[in-house]
Length: 120
Image (cartoon, rainbow, N blue to C red; front, top):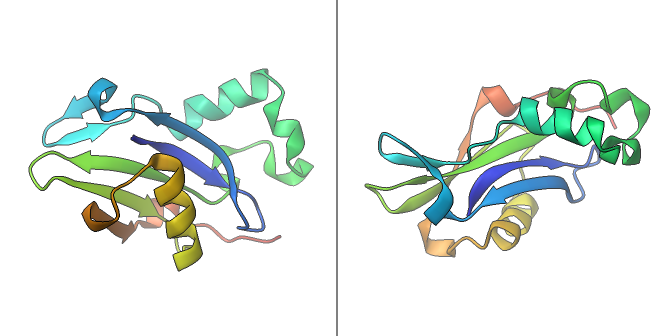
């Protein structure tokens, strides 16, 4: 599976996941990617009222919650999990389970695009 995800503000678990089987993923060069991005999915979550589960200060912008992306490199046969500076080993286990990732075929990479200052 590939896709995007957000964690809860306290980093205890996933808040929301949008995932796609790689057979339906978008091909971009050597990569298979989710067709969704954080901004568009956040707007959908706003429209359907899902964000009311969050404290008010996190609801207005998609980048206020810790987030990341799972992509697949076709050439290397590996899943890449892009994450921010908040990432811990416990998050790897949660993401591996939710995205059904094969443990020996995962690369975790910090990407400043997904880093933020978290204040719980």
